[in-house]
Length: 191
Image (cartoon, rainbow, N blue to C red; front, side, top):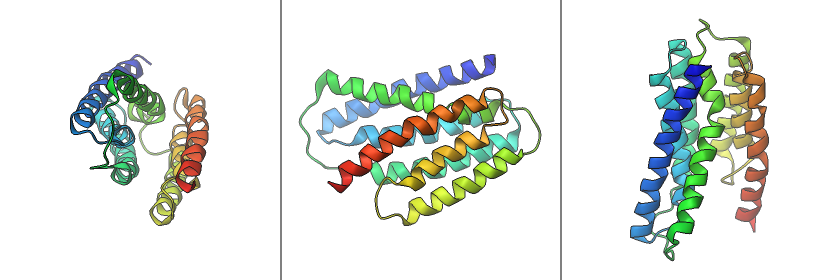
């Protein structure tokens, strides 16, 4: 459990500075939309940070990093809004960015648990998570809207994959927290 807290602390430090950098970048260039791209790209980097820093089973660490990297990279690319004029948001906007940093670290918990798991080989839960992830990612690629049930399936996949780890069942909170956000974002896009 101690390794988990160290890993999450590294993730927290990285995300705080990453989102601060993006807030300054957005503010200086007077563009908007960087908090979503920063959040998604931050999850990608967190997955690889956990894979490198953790001592769990190597193939599992890098498999989960690759899966999170592909899904988060895909979302970051879709979220990257460049050149959209924006009013300066000042320090209030900084708190939005830093709130997203904290959210990213919290939602990366299943990935961190998988990265520290020393059990050799992949469990049936990890294989099931991989299958759910493939369905979700395939759907995301072909979905007509930016946010969909397929993105939520990707979050469910991380939870399912982490089920065999200590505290893994508690990570159900991650897809449950993402569902209202995805529904709200989808409704905003459609209106």
